[in-house]
Image (cartoon, rainbow, N blue to C red):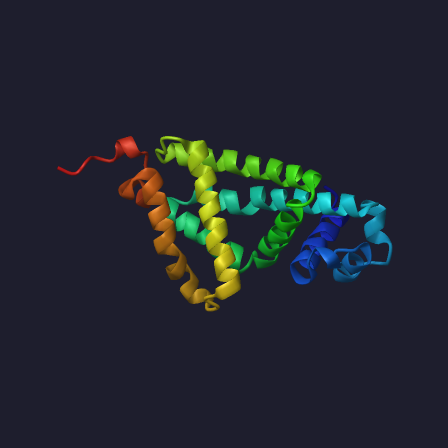
Length: 201
C-alpha cells in the first residue's frame, strides 16, 4: 500500500469514527487528511472502493499492532488486557470505525463478506495463540474470546470508565473469567499449555 493511499485511509478511519458512515465522503477524507480536493477520489474512485479500503486498512493495522502485541506477551491475560485497553484508548478511533462498518454490514452483504473475511484472518491467528496456551478447541475459543473483548470494549466506549488509569483494572476480571473458562485458571494466567500445568493434589 502506497504511503499516500495509507495516509488517505487513515484519515478515512478518523472520519468514520468522528462522523459515522454518513459522513464518509471523498471530500471529508480530503479535509481530514489535509490534502488537495479530489486526491481521495484519485486513489479510491468510488465510495464502495473507499469503504473497502477502510476494511483493508483496519485488518492491516490489526496484523501490525494488536496481534503482535498479544503474541509477544509472556502472560496471556496481561496481553489481552493490554489489547482491550488499546482498543478503547489509543486505538479508539479504529475501534469506532470498525463498529460503524459492522453496523453498516448488517444491511450490506458485500461489506459483511469483507469484514467477515478480515475477521477470519484475525481469529485464525488468535486461535494459534490459544492453541499454544492449551485451548481444547482453539478456533471456537478465539471466536468466543473476540466476542467477549468486543462486548467489553463497546460497553467501555458507551458507559466508561473514562479514567484510562482504571481501565485495565476494570477489564481484567471479566477477561480473566473468560480465559479461565476456555483454558483453566492457571493456564489462563500464565499462557502455558493446559497439559503442562500440574494438577492440584
